[in-house]
Picture 1 (cartoon, helix red, strand yellow):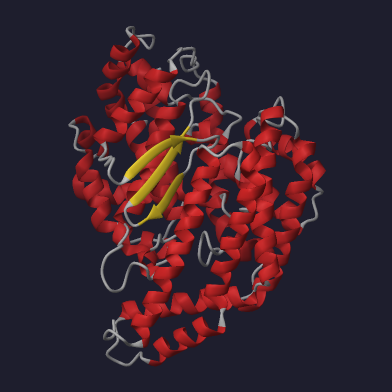
Picture 2 (cartoon, helix red, strand yellow; picture 1 turned 60 degrees about the vertical axis):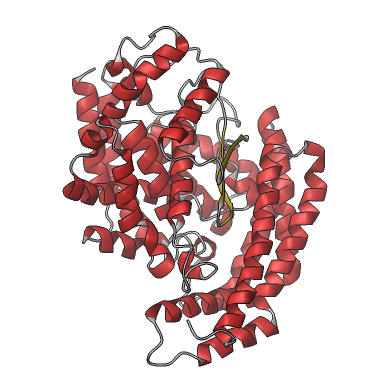
Length: 507
């Protein structure tokens, strides 16, 4: 960067203060979802709305505009590509922020907090109609936001595509359909094979909550958890949250009747946190600059799904960890390591996305991708959402939710107006598979490394090849840089077919 005292330095100082405000908002959000009493929701909504308004002002004010312009004026032929990229990303975000009405920003923050609280209660009571007005309000506000943002977009985008940009830069509905179509074409045949095979052992294991909590702690400790920088809590929906450069939080939940739920959720959320901890947060071009941020949510999900699915659901991992579960429980209800592995990989479609097996998971995302477009762009009435959800569940997975709690109320995302987020989950599976093929070409089979307890080598490879790229690239560009080929569904489908073959062969 330029010398101290330059516009670049003043801009950096401004961004640092903005990050401080954003981290306060993150801390309040974490508190809201972990220990805040329900009666605090209204006041919390006002707190978050105030912070959102202040953040918007800092990111769109005339003073900030002038500061960014001064920094841009300092760019010369000798300036680094990192400086150019940082300023280009800041300029794009500034233009988007300047399009937004501050009143809308505050309304959205309040509606998100209110939607979160109402969703938790509606889900508990299985009462979608009580949540419907909050969802309708969020849809209306997000439509208005997309309309205001449209003029800042470098190319024409639909409302859904505009809202998806913060999660998956440069994504389009056409690109997603191109990636999702092979999944919809080939996964049903795999599901038919699975449905015709002997069922996986039923998950009837009663694993006490205390044992689940202890095993989750053991898993984190074995994967590099540092209590000086990290914290795990409980929440209604598992998530990962970065509060500061050295403050990383995750949450999990224990689900009755699901003995592996908390364990696998811990693996998943820790994958998110490992990525956050590996981002380039030091040096002149990174924190608090955009280059130090996550590439995209699809890349973020690829990291969590790598640790949950490629590692924790792997056969080698099952062989190593089955004795720990047996020792903690005092008995072996799985009948050995193979039964334990089958238990970690139930071969049957389920109703709940976060509990879904790898085979059906992406079809859960196709469902949400389609319904978001229907709500935002095709005038689907909110009160018709449960019926539309149930109808498409039958078509995609052959299942009918017995209630809305296990249907359209299961996810928190729409309760917070996060339209455009869900496809990143499916992209994460595709990215993980393609990156994993490259990793194995360089390190050898992942299963062999896990069998010998060398997960640190996996972390080391990701820390060299994936995590440092930050926002220097888009998700598609990252995959092509790491693997040498454009992102496609083929590596993921190859992985699924090979895993299904192994599970069925040993059933």
